[in-house]
Image 1 (cartoon, rainbow over the protein chains, first blue to last red):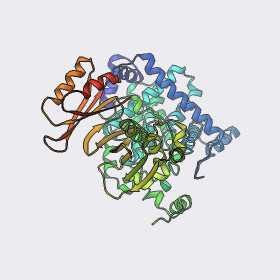
Image 2 (image 1 turned 45 degrees about the vertical axis):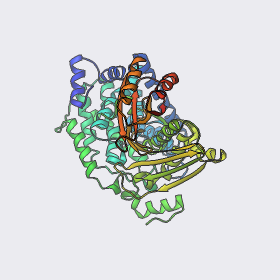
Image 3 (image 1 turned 30 degrees about the vertical axis):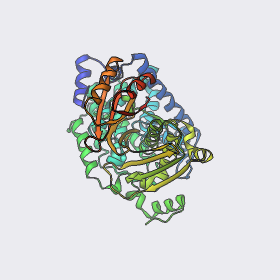
Image 4 (image 1 turned 120 degrees about the vertical axis):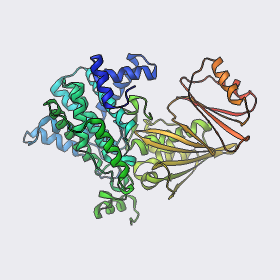
Length: 292
Length: 220
């Protein structure tokens, strides 16, 4: 069983296999399941992700009314062709937003690694799909690669906003996505690790400050940012850029920053955006209670 | 290592909006239901830390009740669990606690009916994964991810060996085992996580061993 990114990359390199394959083999061993069983379970998760994106792109709204409809706006904007950044990036962002809007509306999603950060991995996957034309099996592998990096973060740091802030949720998701994009695009295991490190470095210190405690504001838009960050970091790693701080040390830094982060900024809705005048007003409006 | 499977990371499939506050809460509720073995008549939930501050926004309340009604994390009925429970005549109370707990996402669940009650403490550690840290006053560590047997027994020599021998006879491998007691020589609790679901006949065999008081199981 790999305990960190260094071991994960070494395992892939020494066997001459993809990171996805390392994760698949470990899962088969740990759960005593056949390859088919493990792949088919992931295929079901992929199906849930695809349906959530479809649902979000068709337009959903949360019960609170705080979020919904932004994925639709973005898709319409892309169709006009006047965008400034890039079509794949905006497509990834719209699909990440779509997924999280469905989540906020209490729809069915697949946590990757959490529900609040569930948009980043599927958003990027279904955007790069149009460029790289992967097979269904390669799309399933994308999720195993993302899962392998998330596995390391979960065991060595945290993937919970309440324990580590948003850097642990959207930060982890973004790093996982970057690493998986690199592998799908034909990058090496080492380059996947670089992409994860570059992404996570840009997410360090990000707090979890949901308005009214709802997984809506700013969560939906942080998924947008997480998806674009993953795309850029993947391109940087594929260009041959490396992180001066090794991936495992970045993960460790994230963990320690999370420990030092005040409770008010870890999913308690007591600080940050939740504590702004507008954030408090929204909370009062939604729950009909006064907020100190 | 707390997380052992890739499906702890890519998964679970669930009703939104929060893996820790919604899916994790549903799983804590489901473990309570599984241990109690039937639908309770009353439910009392205490929320701590982030759970206490944000449970309304995250649907933690509907999720934990949904779990106690035996719904899975992906069951659409979770959304209307409070109404469903109300229709079944189940009394529900929620308490927001100020006490600081080891983990920010902690819930104390008390459920019961005319024949008995159960109290457990569940912690949602992220990504929908949970741990049960206390059951009826006993400290323990139970993931709820594997089938498990919980055995209340007298704190006497040979009780643990007898159970282990019996499982070995049935070729059942023990993945994780813990023993906890409130006081020396009094009531104790064995928590045994295994790799496969256990036949009721095995539970019966365990229950008639000397010093064994009660046997319950959690299915995968």
